[in-house]
Image (cartoon, rainbow, N blue to C red; front, side):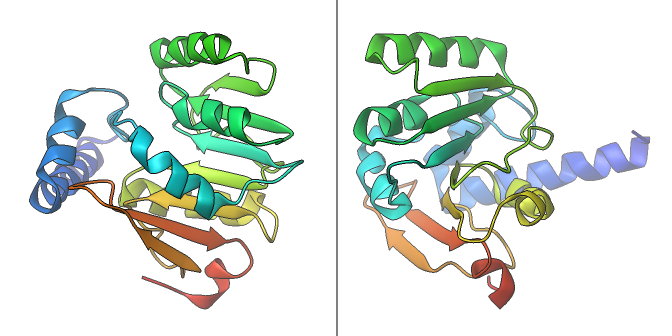
Length: 198
C-alpha cells in the first residue's frame, strides 16, 4: 500500500474512533484498548442485548446464521442453543478468539451446530446465509456493502448493532437501554438495499 493511501486509511480509522469516543465514551475506550484487527476492534456484544438482537433477527428452523467478526462466539453459540437453525457460522480473523469461541461452544454443547471459520470476512463466501449479524464500524459496513449485495439472496436478514449500513434503509430500528450498544438495525436484502437509506 502506498504511503499516502495508508495514511489516509489510518486517518479514517482515527476519525471513526474519535466519533466513537464523542458519541459513546465507553465503546470508544474499549475499541482503543482491547486490540484486534485494526479495521474492526474486538468489542463483544453485551449479553443483555442478545434477547433484543434475536427478536429482531427472528431466527427460524433451517436458517443459516452468520456472525461476521464473531469474537468469542457468544452470539452464534446462543443462537445455536435457542433456535432450531440448520447451522451457525462464526467468522473471525483472530485465531485466539476463534479458539476461545470453539471452547465456549463445546462448554455449551453446541459444537456440532457451529462452524468456525478463521479468515477475512471480506473474502469468506456467505451466499448460503439466510441471516447475518454484524457488530462492526460504519466504515466497515460500508466497505462490506458490495459483498452483501452480490452474495446474499433476496430476503436475507442483516442485523447490525449500533452502526448502520449507509445507503440501506432499515425495515426496523429497535432502541435498547444502556450507555452504548443502544440501537439494533434490521435490513432485508432486496428491500433495504433498493430503497436508499441513512
